[in-house]
Image (tube, rainbow, N blue to C red; front, side, top):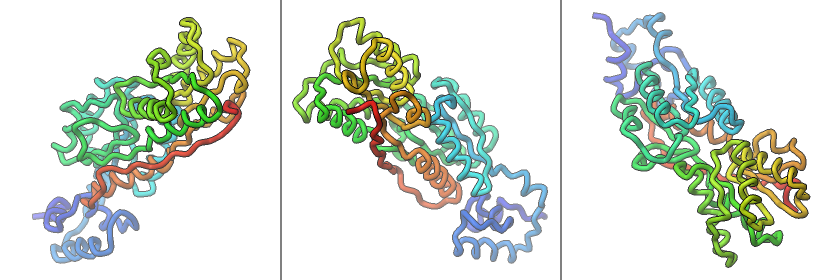
Length: 330
């Protein structure tokens, strides 16, 4: 009877992907000790690889993102794909349009396609039954950029959103603003909650009362940032600065401020979040928070491949963003 890759993997106590790497003499993803162990079992069992079978093995990673048209998610996808290719994996990209229903359907699709692992940027923060399905089928899942409740044991790679928002608000306060509007993303998303918390924390630390009317809820699009400023103006709210929870909303807000003939940053300051490529080319160039986007994508892919290979990975890793000062702040 023909010896199979599955049998070798079981005896060696490793994944099929690890056995495949040894058979294909891949330079990455397998420690020297594991490689020697697997090769010894291959030799002892007189295994003769079926080259067609090897080529048909999955060697694929599913990447589920909320909005591929957002440059932030596009940059993350590029980083994931680059790291995956470096490790001989291909990436299957799924775009949910912020739909949790689509998200769960795509997870099921990826499981059916027998991918080796999944990287998920969630559309919300509440975990559903379908989020636990990959574990049921032995498929590693890594959360990227955002958290899901009740999935604390799932490896998560994100940036320190609360601290970044705190620093942004603090800069505006130190520049003299005490009436700072905040354009938030949807509050069902963990990053939105964290950035709002950082805004509130800065206000509290500097003795500025939090006012609910100063918070406008957007959806991370340019249009919602534009409409947030229209809402502030229509309601007659006095504000000297705006902190937006992402650059797309900041760019929309910037356009609206110009239409109201405000001088920026002399009469209105504005700070974004993400440092997408467009933010440096608008007029004036946008002060923003640089997320470690490429590093986040790379680290998430590395963590997933380690999990595929049965190697230990920390449950949580938080990377530090930094402020990029441009011309929309004093």
